Length: 297
Image 1 (cartoon, rainbow, N blue to C red):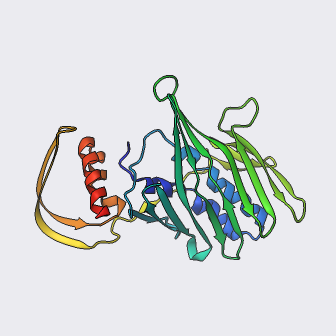
Image 2: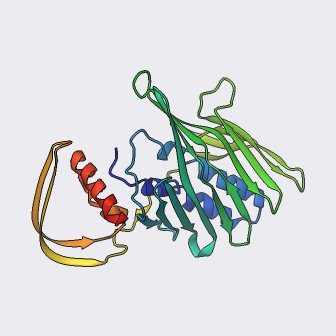
Image 3: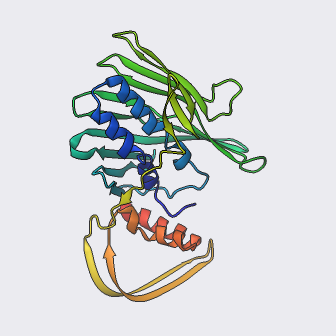
C-alpha cells in the first residue's frame, strides 16, 4: 500500500489538464477540443497506474488541491458501499468545468484482478460545449505467479451529442502490438469529418498521423494538495496514544507535547496515512478502523 488516499490518486489523473484542457478551452474548433480532451485523458495512464494500493477513503473524506495555472480540484467520498468518489475540477477563469465519479466493481481470479469503473465524467466548456466520456477497466495479473502486469483495457467513448461529434477508442485491439496500443476514430455527423486515432498510452497519441502527445516531450504537472482545509480544533495537549490488539499484536505508545490540528475528514491529516508513511503498517490499519467507526457515529 501507499500512504495516499484513493481521492488523491483520483485527482492525480488531472496531471495534464494545465496543458491540454487549457488548449481545449482556447480553441473554438470543437473537433480540436476532442483531440485535447483525449490527450488529457489517455496521457496520464502511464503515470497514474501502479501495483501499490492507495488507502480506501472513509465516508465523507475530502481532498482538494490546485495547479499553478489556477486550476482548482476537489474530491469527496460520498458512499462507502458501494465505494463512490465524486470529483470536481474548475479550469482557470471559468474556462471549463470537469466533474464525475468513480464507482469501482472488482472481479478477482486466482492470479488476477479486474477493476471496472462504472462511473461517468464530463467536461463542460465556457461556451456550452459538453463532452461526456467513460472509463476503461484495469487488469492486474501475475499476483502469485508469472510476470506482474497492470493493463488498461476496453473501449473509451467520447460524446458531444449537441454538436454530433463522437469518438471511440479501443485499447488492446491493435493487431501485432502490445496491449497498451489503441486505435479509434473521431466522427462528426454534421460535416462527415472522420479522423483516425492511433497510439499507445505508454508513449504517444496521433490524430491522422499528427502527434499531439509524446511522453518524451510532455511532462506531467504536479498537483499541490491543500493541507489546511477544515481546520476546526486547535489544542495544546499531552497526547498519549496506545493501540493494542490481540489479533495483530500491535503495541504503539506515542507521547509528545505538541500542538494538534484536528482536521476532520481531510485526507492529508488522517493519522492512518502518517503511520503508513513511516511504515508502521499494523498501527495504520487499526487506526483506520477507529476512524471509520468515528465517522459513522
